Image (cartoon, rainbow, N blue to C red; front, side, top):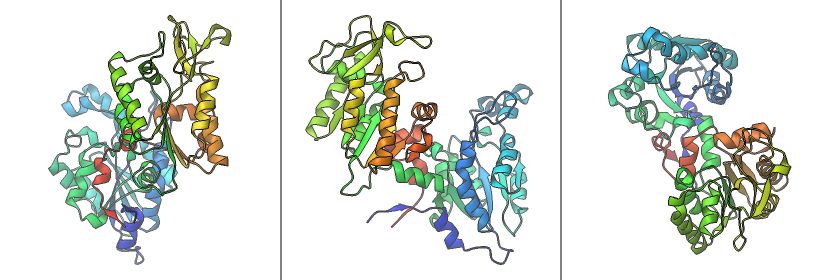
Amino acid sequence: MFSRKRNVVDILESMGPNTSGTDAKNILVRVDFNVPMNDDLEITDDSRIRGALPTLQAILESSHNAVVMSHMGRPKLVQKGEDEGGKQRAKLTLSNVVDRLQTLAKAPVAFVNECQGDKVTSAVAGLDKKGGQILLLENLRFTKQEEKNDPDFAKGLAGLADAYINDAFGTCHRAHASVSGVPSFMDAKLCGVGKLVQSELNYLDFTQLGEKDVVAAIIGGSKVSTKLPVIKGLLNSVDTLVLGGGLAFTFIKAMGVNVGSSLLEESMIDTARELIEEAKKNGKKLVVPVDAVCSASFPSGPMDIKDTKTFDIAPGCDGIQDGWMGLDAGPKTVKVFEEALQGVTKCVFNGPAGVFEIAPFDVGTRGLVDILVDITKNKNCITVVGGGDSVAALEAFGKTKEVSYVSTGGGATLELLAGDKLPGVEAIESIQ
């Protein structure tokens, strides 16, 4: 029988609605409001705020209150007491998100410029017993205790509320006070994950699959060393692993093929060779590019396709000539990738096939994205895209809404794909 994490719906059902209008509970919600802002402190992308709305709205619609906490940036100067003139505090205070949150949530939002202490306790106590209010606390990282997972700090946060919800998937891999510390000081039956985190787990957790599931992962990026834990973890859980981008050249070199001046990690060649053998031994399909679109140097801007060369890089081929570097997957590779993904029921895409930001080296990644869209629409495959570059590629090609799910996590996504336990998830009790 499959298990899942207790979630916000379970918590609200156990509490029951505030039908009397006099017994609103205060629910502590960890969100990720680390939103980008311009020099005028205007939010340039509010998707992280929007991502938390379903959880917040569920709480408000049950006539309870949400005590919301988040971090923003890395305020080291504030932590050290070296923030001259309060410039860093002014830039990273969560008061900058109040207006946008209030507009999007369509509910009153109060703000307190502390995250613990008498002022916060008083603000929480002042929340309306009718419910329907949001109280936003100040940036958790303004204090060192948050990242140190200080037990007294975590206990103080836990004491503010009747229940706890973690809806900040992007920080679930951090063992911080607001992420994994708070639940240890609260009743486990009153701690759960939010709707965003639940969605991420549903799409990214490969530990609970059906017998008929055929799973594939596409991993790109520049370095094998960066993605090594993910590659190792995925070889244990997927049927097909497709490697692209710069990291693929280390595997191609390990197969005895010349890669010219392409990105190569000499120190990782033996590791790549071991992974190739491991995949064969365990009956896994490991797929790498068979041709590459190359340039004589790294381009500073768009190039004419006539100034590029495409070399075959399959085992047995001469490979890339010296003085040329592979910057994109070639047309043969796109076809090979397409064939490898046929019959797949679940596919995750993390890392582009080339330097998609610069034409004409966007063609391979564009072709790969088109394959994902096709198997999503026509082959009943669940497709998940995670990682900044992958999401940026989707956005560049206007395909964000044409895959099943776009993950909000960075490091958390990679660690979950690698099969690692996330502290923020492990802190929440599993139920059948």
